Length: 597
Image (cartoon, rainbow, N blue to C red):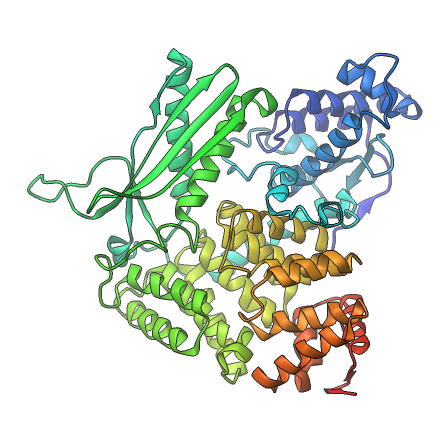
């Protein structure tokens, strides 16, 4: 992907000060007051010509209130806060700040900020300051990544790849936004407006009841109301479900049976601590099919952000693909080729990953599309089923063809035309373009999918994989880690992505651990990843076992391994690292073929 050029001439002090104010006022800059003071202090000191004095000691005293006995080796508060600040600046420049002209970064190795101007961006006074219509996003990356860590080897797993310079991220983000706009414009046929799918009536309906307030008086009541509104806002982004706030009624005024689930909950305040419970109730028999508790300290991130994070966690747990709705008893829901039955069929197939299950899902979705051709979600899933014949061909034992890939791409484009904001449709387009050897366009579609619904774990995970395999390992691995932490996808699916993340940063021990945590039987490609890692670690006997398994279960993979790896890893250096591991395992990887030595 091309990147916008950077003007090497430093911006004026006034421009930097305006940019600082813009960042601090953005909803997408999600850090607490102390981190905001950190950023304001280092920027102000640098503008005043005192950048050489920005050491951990001075920042600890000015921002954190530490005394003259502060020891940076014993108290890592400045280093930790700087890391969070760098991540949040990156997030800002990928969201609200994607079109900003002035880029503020804090390079690793110090605390002095760097100011640069992106050539070709609009001057600051021409950019809107009100970004209130921007969507929210997940909580702090570091906190979410911790969920996915295994206590064994935690330090090694938690090492991060060198973070790209933020100026390049900002420049790339400018291109993504512009390309996404062009993409949507080109894909809209003349006169084609977003249509309402008749099949929507068959999707599961969730009635969100107002969360009860268990304590806290007026404040507790306000928080319960805001929490309910936040959950509704995040749930409606999932196109697999219908969200209502009042019981549907039929033409006779009677309660409709179509509201299959009720989401109920409560909030309770204990000082600065916010405790929330949530449960999903199946209305047909009042069975509680899911329940969970959430606790947070509102002084850490502030009340609004705490509410938004908890609401996102609840919405994700309820509506995420492969989540509670798609795992519950569906005997009373299933109909013949209706939209939701086919959605269930798709997720069931993805969990089983057998050719029989794939055929059932494909047939169901084809019939559903014929009945409801304007349902973007169903068209997108049909695209993914076709695409799976290409990307999971060794597991499904189906011969992949360019024609199959072409059908998948056409369906994905159609799904996006029907609904340009459907995250599943954009996800399908991303994958179709990636496997069509167009990673730049794939990442544009992936960025749009993630912006549409950052709480959709499948979107986040698949986008993270495509970013990583395109060479943007740092950003991609953060999203993959987030997906693993939220139990995304079929069991053990995204763990192989974590294995690749560790492998590409040179941590083969963590790579092997993550690889063995993945479902090795889900896809022969997972075994191939472990084979290369074992080779790199010098474990030739264990690598031999993996090779024997691959040759037994997927005999066509090794002879075509070079093509398959190049299809997935875009950068030559990543390909070479992978092939070096295979060579060390005793597999000769040659042009056009591979064979055991």
